[in-house]
Image (cartoon, rainbow, N blue to C red; front, side, top):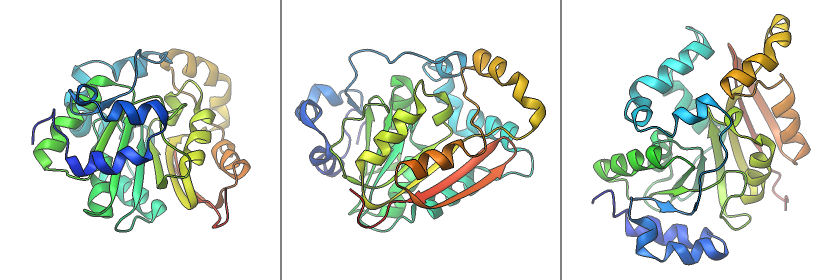
Length: 265
């Protein structure tokens, strides 16, 4: 399997989940030439320096081993969960089972996406969506090396996702929501694509110390990263109909999980 030839099974499972033009483009081999389904004709507007780094060729090469663990450690603190524990937290919040369709939003090179793929098994699907072509190219190559037959990567916009409504059992967005130009539009989209009883897991920023408040606009402007208030994400999920909301805070990072009711539409 090469980076330019994702598994046929993953493509076949992804196609019915796509809406309108995205489904038509998925049938064209040229849309998959880089090993992922490219649905963006232009790059979405960047929020600043941090997001710009994700578009470089350098960061994807060090992301999984060095960049993401080091950055996470800086914000979570030395006693906070490591990368393996992050995966465990995500899987716990998502409650993944064999055959599930799981969506990894802002998947980067797909390190979490591949872990989810193992949990949902060969009959399931792990779909990762990201806007960075360099991240996705690295992910496609890693998928080929790992023979990840139930993983599909998509280049798309998290605030206007190319999926039909109620198509996924779970949605995850770890270490990215604070980088989005409109994070609440992304939450709206995750809510839209989830089926009744669908589960969501989010890892993002959180403001802890009162002394940080005056510096918050400065930090956000310089870094391009939003700093959420302690109840901002939990409140946003409640407003969107989620229940069983759980929050775990570590340093300047929060992990939030929730579930839609069985009768949610």
